[in-house]
Amino acid sequence: MKTKFLLVATLFLGIALQAQEFSKPKEIKLKDSFTNPVASPDGKYVLLTKEHNRGVYLLDMTTKKVTPVAPEEGIGYGYAWNSDSKTFYFKTKSEKEYFSDAKVKAYTIGQKKSKDLDLNHNFLPAYKGKTEIVVHTNPSTLKIEATDLKTSKSWTVTNDEGQFYNAILSNNGTKVAVHKGADIWVYDVNGTDKGKYVGTGLVTGWSKDDRYLIGFLDESHDGHSVDNSELLLFDVENSRTVKLTSTENQIEMFPSLYGNNQVFFTDEKTGKLYVSTLKF
Image 1 (cartoon, one colour):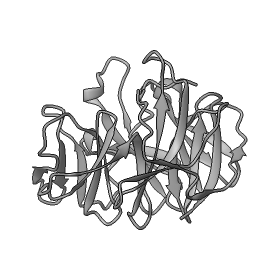
Image 2 (image 1 turned 135 degrees about the vertical axis):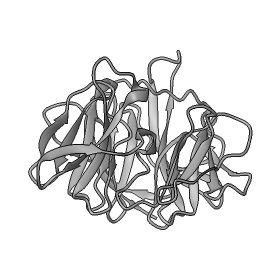
Image 3 (image 1 turned 120 degrees about the vertical axis):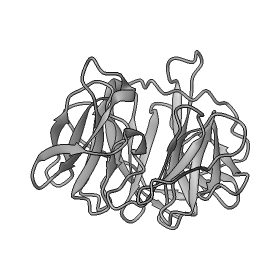
């Protein structure tokens, strides 16, 4: 499979090979190809989408059954779980609507149905249900902002020059991982610091203790198709990058940490889903 999102980066200086133990990946055998897995906090379910972010699907890890939730093209990104693992949130839009007009729906697994949620779609995937603070990109300034949902007060997190995207709030709510081009930076959520450079790539989540970020770095020779991609672990405090995978015949992307440091990820070359365990 190919992805629309490409990171063209060739700087691997400072990357340590296999410094952490990453168990041999186990394939989750499914009939169709999927991408962008996001595991529920308890690991019992996984949100998936298809190529070009087409649709939202729910994988039950007990039965390995995949349930279609929404079919629209381009909506399979930015989905997020409630902390109770019983509800998740996703964006939706009609065929004639722009992405800027997207709405948010909440799907409850027990009821097997979704309902409209009065929430700014830009607040996904930071919104987790009882979330007080969400981080998001301001589409006008391309700065990362934080918003207090109780008071509706917003403030700028990234006061440095540049265009920022894909903000991920730490589990303790004090730090924000952001992207500026292919570079990864970490800021205090209050927006008072200048930010700390962490590495190069695309991060998808924090470790439970907020010491590490997990992500990947892909390569492209033409800026359109992905030639290779490996999973990476970023040591935030020491700005050190650990290479978790090193394969020639797979394109590992979109790792999702859950449970006791278990990791879902996809091989974008085949659309297969894998699970592994990371030992720090």
